[in-house]
Amino acid sequence: MKRPTQVRAIAWAAAFAPALLLGWRALDDGLGANPVEEMTHFTGIWALRMLVACLSVTPLRRLGLVLLAPARRILGLAACGWATVHISIYLALDLGFDFGFVLEDIVERPYITVGFSAWLVLMTLALTSTRGWQRRLGRRWVRLHRAVYPAAILAALHFIWLVKADLREPAFYAGMVAVLLGARVVAQLRARSPRAAAQTAT
Amino acid sequence: MWIPKRGPIAKPIPSREITDEKLYLDRRAFLRGTAAASVGVAVGGCFPSEESEAASSSAATGLPAELAAKPAPRHYRTEEPLTPWEAATTYNNYYEFGTGKSDPAENAHTLVPKPWSVAIEGEVAKPGVMSLEDLVKPHALEERIYRHRCVEAWSMVIPWIGIPLGEILKRVEPTSKARYVRFETLYDKVQMPLTRRRALPWPYREGLRIDEAMHPLAILAVGLYGRELPNQNGAPLRLVVPWKYGFKGIKSIVKIELTERQPRTSWQGENPREYGFYANVNPKVDHPRWSQKRERRIGEWTKRPTLFLNGYEEEVGPLYASMNLKRNF
Image (cartoon, rainbow over all chains, first blue to last red; front, side, top):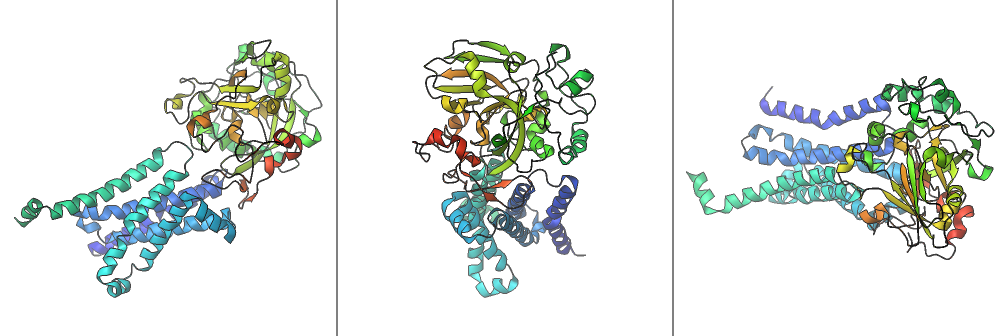
């Protein structure tokens, strides 16, 4: 097997690993007293983790871990997939597919508004992540897929806004997103500064 | 050792509630002091005195000691199916022991509910510090089966054992200036090591208007499911006000103060925009961040509509007849 194929295989395994974990927990203790809440939190947190992992690929590549590159798309799809399961549980079990409730929640509750927006962005990016769409959109594809940055910010905000007290966990993920987006800003600034250009030239 | 007055024996717990015991036992693995528990504790239904203070669970089962109580008047016991013991004792909000739902069941073993005393202060003719036994002894324990609605939009049905708060308040003779009741939870960094993190302003504080406190629905609970309160449920003494959101039901009470002015609660201190003094269950008044129109009954997959005053409108509705409940949330 070639290196990129191996990396892809590992990334796919990672993308589906939470499903095994969830299944194991369901068998272990039936997901506790409130399984719906547990599943909602579980799928939400894994969507966010996959998104953070996806955003780590490029900064790590810049640091020399070039072999990770093929994992980026798969991790992005995983984030979208888990976010889709997350929102499906909410639509089916919290709102019973009642469209009135859905609309009210999306309009009136800021944390749901931002969460839903993040999911819409991820869905758009997942659907246009194929080679065909890459070819069709050309240069615009890169610009479109930069929307993953605001999606990550919205996802982190969604988490911060829904906790009642004790912000440590959402703050940790917001920090991760900040660091990963910060790394890109630094890379941009370096690429522009003449000294850095001179350094890379020599 | 003191044995409470026996009313008609409470209905035995249906076996479906007790099947969870095995799981419960496996988890706790007899961690808590079982050695000192006397047979009397296991069968008598009582508060062990100082001699057996380590015995918070019975030797035979590892479960809290049984309590005998007379059944509540019919309209104070809902016919809805009870939430299983396992759920009611492993899914808790008790931030002194962690902010996760399963944290209190895992961490609250450091709480020492015996011996316990409660300070009664403020606008009363008979202030003082009372042992739990002296506080509870003069009253017959009653079983009340109440709906319990959390501000987080989940709910349970719990068979509490306790005494009407109003009866205790009458005993200490509130003065004419007593317009509110202020409660405080134990704040002990040794028994509650996680309070070093300020998840909320400690000690946890709650309050009621005097007419709310005197309402016969309001009880001080010492047990649930025919047993003494487990630590994570607020041992040894907690407030239960079923028409209000669960956070009003302050746990492990060490102080009751009658005041002239409205006390400030911990949740108001944490976030006054989101948590008011009244905190009445009300599907028409949403939490600023989420809907209160519906709730998930623990054990059910989908949500059900939330009832005004948690279904106790007939009893406590008149308390709020002239109030704007949107403003007084």
